[in-house]
Picture 1 (spheres, rainbow, N blue to C red):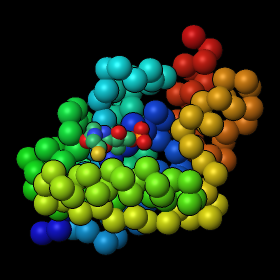
Picture 2 (tube, protein in one colour):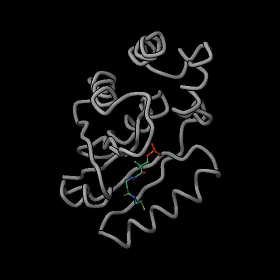
Picture 3 (cartoon, rainbow, N blue to C red):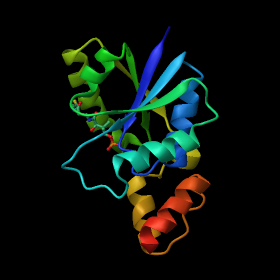
Length: 158
Ligand code: PNS
């Protein structure tokens, strides 16, 4: 049984995330989408909202489940028998920090990181940009699943 983690904040999940998770689900028996809970990070969607959106969006991928974690990612992986972390790389600018984290993580536990190039259609996409554009009334319907679009509209209206 091969099990991988796709970790992130997912505030909120974008089509770029879905692309990486779906492609990872074709390579591993099981994929755990690991939603980081970090109380010091300002988020638009709380943990339950982020998990709920991910569950709806990923419902048609039978070998994918969504879990939360706090503390070190490698501890979560060890606890759940996860041997690989899969991270999407959008551009060279992502690489430095991701490499640093991957190397640190590999010294902390027997967890390897695999980098998956983002599909070109999503290479500029980031949750932070989606939120910024949506906050200013821009159209993000091409960048997020419909359920996330509705959640963004509701959040920003309230
Ligand atoms: O979507 P994000 O915000 O880029 O996700 C970052 C995340 C949650 C994957 C990363 O911050 C993380 O792994 N946090 C857990 C804490 C940890 O293990 N830190 C040490 C990294 S070397």
